[in-house]
Image (tube, rainbow, N blue to C red; front, side):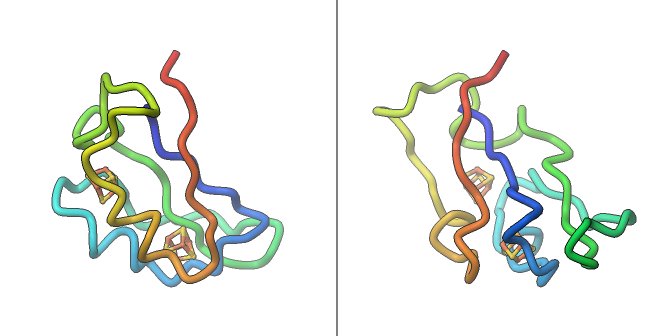
Length: 77
Ligand code: SF4
Ligand code: SF4
């Protein structure tokens, strides 16, 4: 699975960037429609859940840490 950030919910606090032990996220440099610098999922292949399906996730630290519930999982292409 791959993390996805919903920019309509994200406030650009960057907690996900700092909490991820694998460096999956990177600080954003583009203003979202909400007017925040939302991070990007810059290196999804580094995530502990890369290559796993939704029933076998082994880390959700970013999802649980996000104060705006802006991070969800989507299947990898
Ligand atoms: S699930 Fe864990 S490893 Fe994957 S992006 Fe979130 S914090 Fe990083
Ligand atoms: S923790 Fe949530 S609200 Fe904060 S930057 Fe990450 S996705 Fe956006």
